Image 1 (cartoon, rainbow, N blue to C red):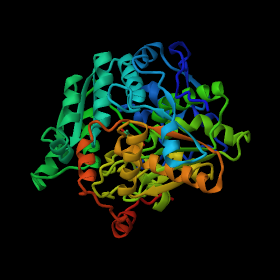
Image 2 (cartoon, rainbow, N blue to C red):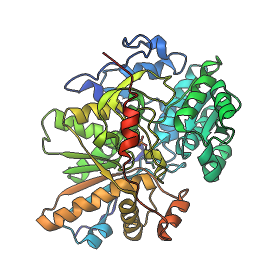
Image 3 (cartoon, helix red, strand yellow):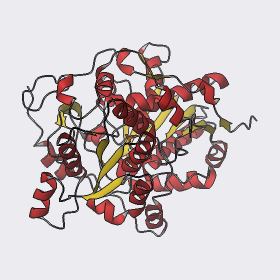
Length: 454
Ligand SMILES: *Cc1c(COP(=O)(O)O)cnc(C)c1O
């Protein structure tokens, strides 16, 4: 039996280009619409928020886009990342399946998020921007952007959802260690925040409100832009380095996945893994490849939402994107996988799902924790609660192989470690965790408020 466990590219073989799926889509993406006019938006509409280079990437149809040397130089701190063969998990499951996982938890902030944070900080720096605002829920994105800002001398201002700010102090301290400024949202620093505080001084905040504060702050100053850590096309582009590295490694060892599995919140880590593979499905060379997007049953965007135009934020400030959505007013229950609680989904993933090129599945919290614990006790890694959703499906698929006797190759996109999520592990291990039914009533109510687009 071949016991080789780790597969790593040489630093010099790290990809020099990101892969842009927009070059290969069988049908172009539906246009992004201006919320006021209902017409497709142009670059000028986005210019107060993003550097022009990122706006160009958002709509580019060039297949490969060069990764700037300055960005690659920062990537070298943890990239290329390792592809593992999960020998011990396979053995514990007694499955003939071959399980591989690409692990993004070795970046200093502990997830895939710096792949885009570093690129975004760089392009902002090149445009003379001194300051970037953003929002964060559980704190993973805020810490990744603070990390990236430190390399390019950019001040990072993070509006962190109040309830997380109070309950999860360690991500905030990470932001501060990297020089970021983190304040609870609602804050007295913006009109949106002041309005909410006047209504409810003890408001726990929400991601939608934090976005509104970060956007208001960014447009009020010339030296400041706004940054988003998932969903948008340019974010998925930057994350494609995960899939490009994986594909190069798998080619080297002569394997190709039958099934690729990952978790989706806004969709960036998993799309980053599979977009270079989905290309093979589009061009017909790998028609049987299966790609499974896994989401929480409590926030079932892809499995229960309609494919419709909606806002990206709760306040309705952003352009309208066509996506599977639970409605921008949808408030998912407070599960531990904070990074998966988003009402919408990356338009690229939604388009691929709509074309039948990828699949979606929803998983309940308790089952995902059980899978995460199995993974910790076989492969050793303490996974983020987000990632556990994908691990659950990998285990299910491997057990199906055991029944059928098929030796399928299963590839897991492992998005990050859970070292800052020990409170969630504690709740699970002490039996305090429960499943949330997907709130049908709340979804219906929220969907009734979808914007009208003709
Ligand atoms: C933020 C996060 C996610 C969800 O975001 P995507 O954009 O869907 O990738 C998943 N896993 C980890 C570890 C995260 O930090």
